[in-house]
Image (tube, rainbow, N blue to C red; front, side, top):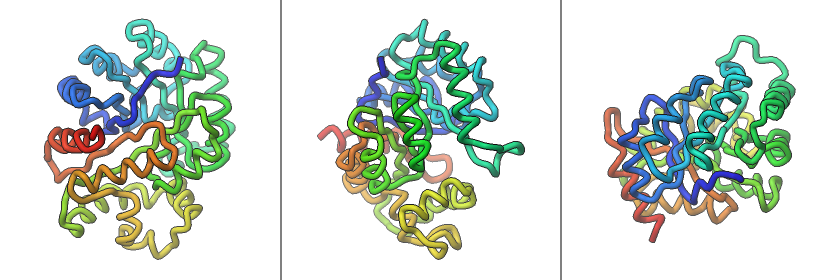
Length: 278
């Protein structure tokens, strides 16, 4: 059975996650934590976060097929689901060609990776795929519980839902800055978006499909592009961007809260949770 991730979750790099944060967001009503940063195949961080909480689902966002051996990941999956049944979703993806020396035939390599997971007994409904374009979205529909798109817009969510159909999970990530000064908010968002994402071909190609031009990718991203990728404003305005994904067909939105360097995200998560539960 597919783990129940709820309507909203958080997405954060593994280096920013802790049991304390997991307990805090669980108490606010978030349904899941998505672990960014391509966690290692042993997935020990998943055990730690699950052990610190009672009902929260932990998902990988994502395990990278080039750096995490499929057989080892399958063994980790079985260990985790035996200890915490129904609370782990294995997110899998191909990463970026710029980050991997031997990035050949990514689609075929992803299919082979899923074949190994099948052979090792990892159920399809306990895994999801990082998917942006039509080909991998279709694969997500056919060979997993659904899709976890990253760096997208509500329009992409609408298109993805049409391709996936009604039943598969659609769980996009959404960057949020709680800041009412638009320029300050854009500066924070641009810091995260420009490097590395506007230098990575898979994300740029997806944004081109959505109608963005080369001018929008220059100089760290146009204001219009940053506004489209990073919801900002007061908590109510920022939460409205999350709601746009839900209205466009998302089942769940993974919120990546961007703060000033060294900032504590807990209050921001609380503000967003209050707005989204209203």
